[in-house]
Length: 133
Image 1 (cartoon, one colour):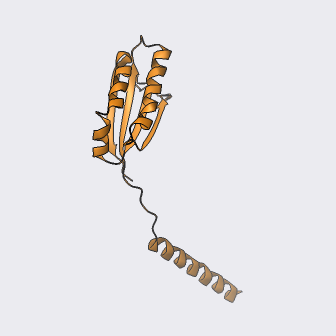
Image 2 (cartoon, one colour):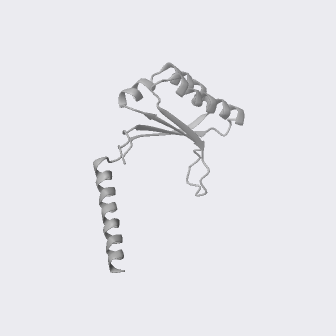
Image 3 (tube, rainbow, N blue to C red):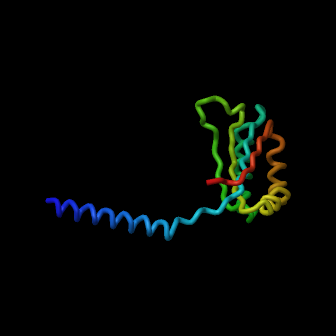
């Protein structure tokens, strides 16, 4: 019984050391940092659901028009905390560099979107940051 237990423990430690060695020899690659651009909108009380839908569709079209946008997602606030201060929509864009963001900001498609948004916008909040892991 003792020999069996010793053999089992020796096998366990050998496998553990092999696993540790293989994971330290080939650590997982760290994802590249991305520049995130988070945009929150509060719409005017006079904006209709159709007006807001037009803004949503215009923003959702930007990734197909501006190649510097590497990732895009959006959603509606559904927090039960009631701390959104009237902001209802969040649009979340990712860029690989500050130069890419700099190309996005004055891009004609982005400017055209601003004209669609403008008549319906009460407030906007923008936060940009580099991802950290």
